[in-house]
Image (cartoon, rainbow, N blue to C red; front, side, top):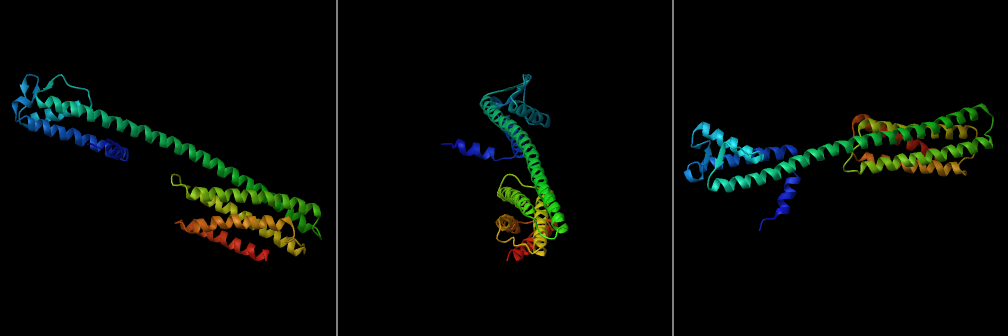
Length: 275
């Protein structure tokens, strides 16, 4: 018994070009069958009123008949006889099936293109939001650093503002880390090098800003390790480390690999300050 599901699955796994090649091969295969049947007058094709024989022009006739039959357009000028009638019906059926798969592949390719465009648009929007938010928190911390540098001692209000900004920075570094890790495991989609470059750089700049504020607090001899500040920084380190470990194992271009190494150096420096 014929396993129809096996053949359907086989066709579904074929590419558009492979199905077109198969369609042409089927047309030429049936043309050869009609040509061989022309050696038996009772099963040959009748072109207008003349039976198809074995010449070059007759071969072109059977090729013509095969492909008009395969496309189900038909030709009143060529009429099959005997077994050729049954074979032409089989060819019509195969032609309809293959044509259906060709249309399906065209529609599928178009849908995949639309989905890819939507994904790219969504990805670009997500990356833009993440980078903008991280930039805002880095800017706020930069202003705090300037204020702390300008005073003799760290003010309580500055610490409250710093903790709030570090919490926001922690939340967003965690968000970008989860996003990067999730995308690295996605078998369908893949981020380009520019996107990875932008996100790695955003994490690196955020860690660098944390290092800068810690050094400034140390200069002012402020005991920040017993505050919420330390917990936020630890969370930032853990999230960034996850990204670094996941992408360290992946094949990356030299530029991205260098940026990943810079990120690792920032993590190492930040950890040493936490001791």
